[in-house]
Image 1: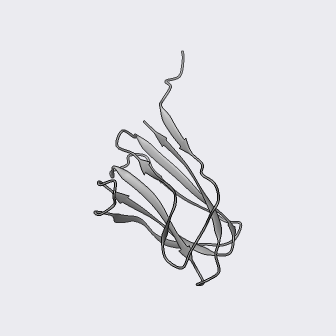
Image 2: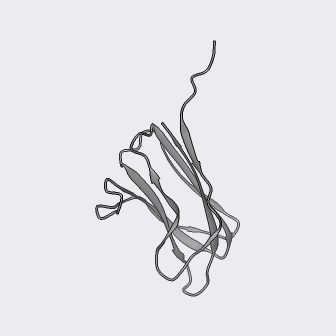
Length: 113
């Protein structure tokens, strides 16, 4: 018996600094043909706050919060997963926990179709 191979997209962009206003971490995840999505936010320095948003429009003019803002300490890892994504697009937004104290974070995600 052989396993069923599923198509997937893996995203691992470079480290990115937070700012005093919410900014996109990594790339927008296209989940229109996905059966599942799993992401991790790896924070290297300074505490940040992150949230996950979903939308049906790629420009996020109809964005909804799918994971409430959560603090992520230096060296910590946050996550979000959905076995059946209901939104077409997902994104992670980060912001400084303390204004002017920038963290450095990386988004790693797998979208399976």
